[in-house]
Image: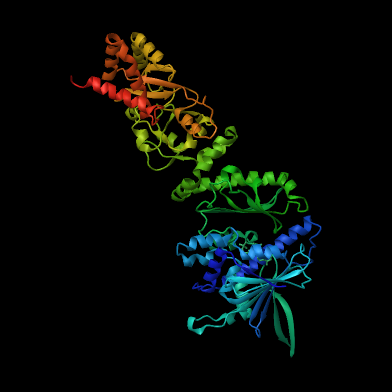
Length: 626
Ligand code: ADP
């Protein structure tokens, strides 16, 4: 019995678009249907090796039937076929595949890009007024017939079909001379030959058509193969144009932009494989969510095995898409085992180095493009340094870029070292929300005076990364906001020490008054204009404390060691000493305000802003003329 069902809402939208398509390159319907057929054969081929209920086929192929009389074009495959549920689910709704991305894009009225998408099965309705599918899955008791005019419903009924696979029959639309649409052309063998050659040449299975020839007064028919069947990644590099690779990428990975970088590599020797890798110009829409799955497609001798093999690509290169085809992988083992395959590990190692070296090349030869890459994916590289206790620092450190106190363009660490003078012993960095905020930190004064360049750490991950990367080419990193300053000369240091002795009593009192908030109070040699600054001790930095506190179950004990540094040359210090000797009761208010001031300068909100405001008001009242 035939059942009539409705397409899901999104599908209807897409169907409407296809039916009323103003798109001129209707040709792509053939590419889409052939590529579906090829995927279906891939699936069957693979399953036949691992699932006893799926019989294999002596020859996998895709056949085209052009029936002039009835004006139908049929695409037949001996792939996996579809069960009734699959017909409903796969063709009645839009999967999260190309079609959906396309629809999202199309809301932005960008019709010309249609051809760059894998718009999928529905594209059939650009050329057909009715589509009929006959299909049989090895998992079903019977075959099914699916039929639709593409409007809003389709019909499904069981049919007798003995062979596993799918036939898609297109009842072509009537020619429409007014709009120069001659659908008859899709019935002509030479058109089909041309389209297959153009769009589907690399399909791994023969795409065949029956041709008739006159030989010695006799008419003979034979099946002719239209495609060369060499997968694009198996073609000699010199035969491949950038355009061909780009269009392969867009179709295969449902992107509508050319990739930022393409890496094509053939390795022969103990390990033989081909890899075709791409870095998308923009990260996938779910890239920053937990749903994103990294991984490369895996093929063995051109046979598809797995869609996203995670073992092939490290997390810090998780943005890389593409495929690996290796003759060395044994096919008839389960996927789980395959993941642990030693060969895969070796390939992964090669690829990691290859991606790195290609990125280095890009950095050297096309800075602008590299910066684009870095702004999109740089954070991943920084997390890469941080992960595994810094095991990948060597690999990644030269790919990381920073903006600095002196440069609004990104520079590498190597460039930083080249630019510094011998007198400078450390690589300085400062943490903050923005360049402006960092530049106004009181701790910057000393560096400005010495004309030292400071790396700007404005991302959460920066300070974590630096924890596992204490040096670069043996030069230590040094935060300008943590520990003692290493910029003071001996004379200055001993002057400060003397001064601290003289004011020992005051410093001790301040320390006692602020003992709940602070670990130490010291006199500073690094401040110029500012009366105070807050620095952290050697362990956790203030910035890391801020980042860690944002995490859901951060323990309360997570606290950076806080040290208040007071500028002895600032008039406020003079004021402090006077208050200390003449009105010691008022010193606590001063101490609290100083501490809060230091917090604010660092961009930290005081724990109790109300108490701070009240204190401020109190002192203002006291200071007003009586
Ligand atoms: P996509 O191929 O991007 O997933 P399509 O709209 O082209 O989207 O196809 C939807 C789904 O229908 C496919 O993912 C596949 O599961 C199924 N399908 C399409 N054509 C065939 C076919 N010839 N044989 C088996 N399944 C098919």
